[in-house]
Image 1 (spheres, each protein chain N blue to C red):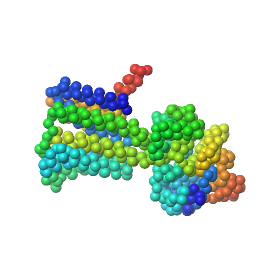
Image 2 (cartoon, one colour):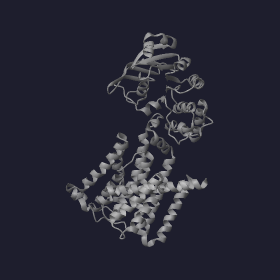
Image 3 (cartoon, helix red, strand yellow):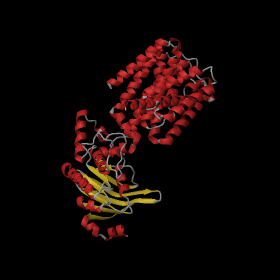
Image 4 (cartoon, chains in turn green, brown):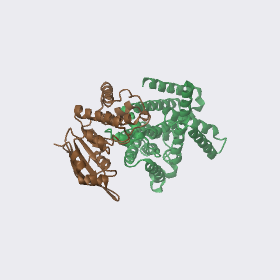
Length: 308
Length: 236
């Protein structure tokens, strides 16, 4: 794990250098760091537990709306509303998804998580909840996290610490159980272990990181609305970033998020929004067909070939 | 006191009564044979005992404990374990890691863990193969791995499903020697489910015969092969 910690320190320093080199693009760097955190936390649970979670934005959305409500309606300062939002997002999201993954698996889990985010999107948009959620306008304006150097550094640090802790978990005894549970849950049961306990733990860590990211993100956006929380497109973007970079690697998710955000920024104004998405999805498709391990998988294969 | 008692177990699947009023008692330290034709309910019975299926009726008493509400892993942690007819493993993960998996619930220290894994590997004859991938193993070694996985959970009773299936006579004899050692040296109780009567005869004390989900005979091997119901079940 010592080697792993050096790698994450190196990632942090690369991030720091980027904040200096690309000062005028700090906004893009922050935006990419947020998505790297979301992609990494989604990938951590989905890739290593064997459950394809299409409802990861539940963590982000509950956290985002909770901090929004406390900040906007009760005038809680960010230092209080963000932890409350993160706790609510990870707690409520985990209780729901953990219960769900104990009850169902495979395609049923995917369908139910998918339908859950559709239902939650419509729930916050409903006119009955307009006084609380702001319906289609969302909750705004929220106290804002400004696009600043300390925010960028803080986010990069959070991303690196989360990535390091995820890998530490995967290398622990709990992570070793997940390696088996992903392949054969019955085998884990006959070894005297409850596979759901370990995947539930993985889900909890994934949810905590996702929810902290979600609570911060709405304040960076200045509003808590469907499009930056529960929206299906938001979830799809997170998945695309993870599979493009390589969902079996924390580094891959980060690379994927940065590539997509930089590409979006580059294409903005040059092509219409729908074409922007088309280009990104086509690249992701091409990479995924070439290597299910994403860009990180391609690099790993090339490295192996070079070594002979 | 018997280590395992099954009282009037019934198990029904849609359209099939897989087990009907099965009553069985196994003494501590015994090697018991459980035989029966294909589809007679042998595997269903052990999967019910381990908790993969819940019985519709009846009681499972293990080491004085009623197991009806225990989950599979809770039963395993009480010392009850099974092995699979077709070796079950996760390709890409070494034999060492497969044996390690069963020890995790006991949370051993790193040093004692390594020692334990190597002891188990030696007991089953896999000590020179611990770093190999199970997919690369010949059938006999894969079956040895099944036994090793079971041993890693510190069992008191091990239910072994069709361990001789696909093995040659010589390989079967090697397996018998492994099982006999475990029974004698570790005092393990063994429930041996098999088709290979030639092999079963060599190792078991008492044998139970099951057919169409019902126990039809019980006794020494010599007694049961003379039993008319058993002859009818096997020969028609």
